[in-house]
Length: 342
Image (cartoon, rainbow, N blue to C red; front, side, top):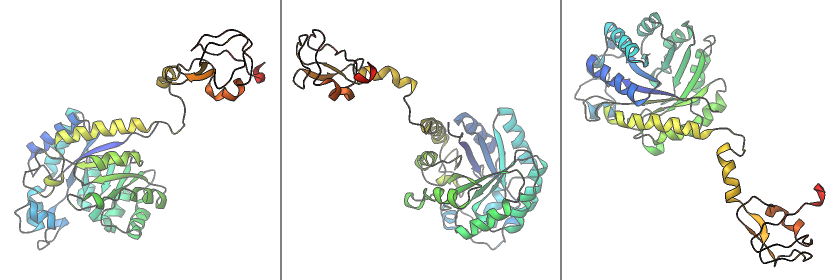
């Protein structure tokens, strides 16, 4: 059986700075069947300069003049995040957060976080990479997003992160345009990542519209899929437009589970469910006309018809030319013992 795919409902900043919205999103993620919900944790002053420009998609989706102003409104306090973790425990969904600065990483380590996601924008942030590699925790997982990155940049980051002892390593194909156009998804990069970085399992950080990319990635061996979701795509904020609704998240979760089950076993064999169909769907060698004892079986008096409970048509050339040892009525299955079994 294939490895279970971990589905992460990426809440990110789609809480819009509201603890109430964050909890509503957590509940929807739980109801949809996601394995985890993920947030983004940062201190704006440690993440961005006050003069940093907005990305083009951020300019379209917000009314803010700078990244600093936008992010300040989306920043979760430490107490708010602790409240979120407790609420997630109460409703029965696991939660973790992406740290965008060392101080936030240290805070999350103090909470016992075990999954460490490096977002695409931090793949060249050596101090943060080293910090995450050094964190000690049980069942540690490191997940690296590779949007905007070259193979050389990915190799440099993985070299640092592989110093983490006994950590499960997962590398994600990602495009950081929100939303990502279909012909920019490049899902086949997952094969390249698997080949270039054999210590790492592969997955997808999906910013495309809908659920097609996520479902396709399952067939390509993804073990980890994250997808932004929102209560309403029309809400103000940088990521809502490229996010899926709770209903779409449910569709994604159900679809991934079905796709995973469909991958099944690489060994080609007759399944239990197929066995009962073989006799019905296959054919046997039967009499095409009435045949008398002593007649020679030929292409004129034999044919192949369902059901397949008699002699297989694969023995056609063994049967043709032999002599009938008894009478046969039309459509009666031929009884034949090959010389090899005599």
